[in-house]
Amino acid sequence: MIRRTFVILPSIGNGTERSLWRDGIRHWDEFIDSPSINGMSQSRKEKMDEHLIEAREMLNSGHSHYFTNLLVPCEQWRLFQEMEPSVTYLDIETDGLRHDSKVTVVGIHRDGETRTLVRGIDLHSDSLARALRGTKLLVTFNGRSFDVPLLDFNFPFTVPRVPHFDLRHGCARIGLRGGLKKVERDVGIGRPKEVDYVTGEEAAYLWKLWERKGNQNALNLLRRYNEEDTRNLEPLARHTYERLKSRLEGEMIECQR
DNA sequence: AGCCGGGCATAACTAATCTA
DNA sequence: TAGATTAGTTATGCCCGGCT
Image (cartoon, rainbow, N blue to C red; front, side, top):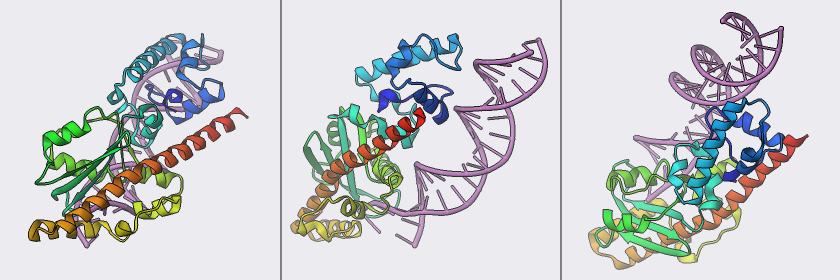
C-alpha cells in the first residue's frame, strides 16, 4: 500500500491522492513514468518526482524512519506489508496507569520469536535497545498513548523513532471497538485457559505478588499473560491490515466511475 | 499581472475510547 | 480511576495553478 501512497508529498492530501488514483496513477512508478500529471505544472511534477524517487530509495534500503513524520499516524498502517519481517510487536506490563508508572515486563515479538524482559532480571536500557534493534515498524494496541510514552519515561531514547501501527485506532476504523481482549474475541483469536481470565489490572497485582512475596508462580503467570498479549498482536495486525487495505482499494475502484 | 477558486495545512475544539 | 491520544469536525488563511 505504501507505494500507492501520495499523501507523503507536500501539498497532497486525501483529495488529490484520490484524484490521482482516479486518473490511473496508482503507484509511485506510474507517477514518475507519466510524462505529465493532470492539474500539475511541469515544474511541480518534477519536484514531486524527486520526492518519490527519494521515497523509493528510502523504502528499498530499509530506512523506514524516513516515513515517520511524512505519514500522519492514522495512515502508518500502509507500511505494514513492506516492513515485514522487521515488524516488532510490543506490549508492556506496568505497576499502574500513571504516566510515570514502573515498567515491569516488556514483551517483544518479531519474526516468529518472542522475548520477555523482566524488571530486576534482564530488563535494562541496553537489553531493550538490543531487542528492538533493526525494528522498522512498531505494532501495539494503544501503544501511542500508553506503551511508548511509558517506555520513553522509563528508558529514554531507547524506543526507535520508526513508524507505528497502533491497532487500537486501526481496529476502530474497521468497526472493531473495545479493548484488546474483546477485539481478539470478535476476530476469533483464542487464548489458553490459564491466562484467559487475567486482566491488565490483575497483571499489576501479579507483579506485586512477585515483588513483595517472591511468588514465582505469580511471575510465571504474568510472563505467560504478557506473551499471549504480545503474540496475539500479529494475527490481529494481519487481519486489520487486510481490511484497511481492501477498504482503500474499494475506494480506489469507486474512484474509477 | 491580477483575480479567482480549489485544496492543503494548521489550529482549536469535541467526543470517544483505551491502557495496568 | 486518571490521563492521554487520536480521529474527526470546523474555520481560517495561504499557496498554487488556471484563466483572462
